[in-house]
Image (cartoon, rainbow over all chains, first blue to last red):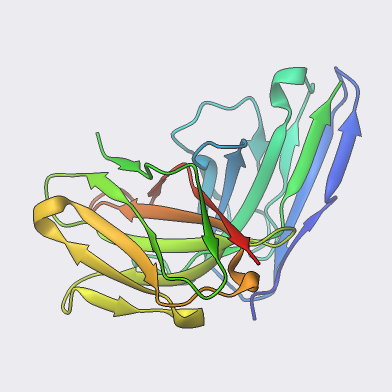
Length: 114
Length: 114
């Protein structure tokens, strides 16, 4: 059973607001990921981390930022939300670095920016 | 650049009927291949994966997939579907040297007719 949590599950917010999407995992995984998912489209990697104090941008340009201060926590922040940020955001984690371990996904945060 | 194609946006099958979901990839060598399922309100879950060896791989929930190098395909099959199989299915590909990042297909939504 995967233990990866995302909060909030749903968020409706006005343009210009700062938001933080939370992601936590209790499996001690080194690698964590943020994906953006739109209906009928492939998942796009926006950020990933291979461990504490390690973060990288993914293949999809994003105005969001991430931090990895603790192994279990990988929050994503939007400094100023815009309607174009409306999407579903998925957090995932996987085991040790240097391998194609299974990615375990949280339930997602569905963000709507008005 | 690597890409993953799932030609069917949605498929409808009757309960008890067999199922095949198609996945084609574009990559010069043999990549690492994955199938994930996303049930409503839940996170994506790994069904099965192929790295090497026997080209027919067994997964959870009675699913299997066959890797065909000549066709660059990794189709997912199930001999008899259950109503609980209604979900969205994603094929993903990992290329060696890609920092363990997955390239995802756009998904196929499976609808089960009673």
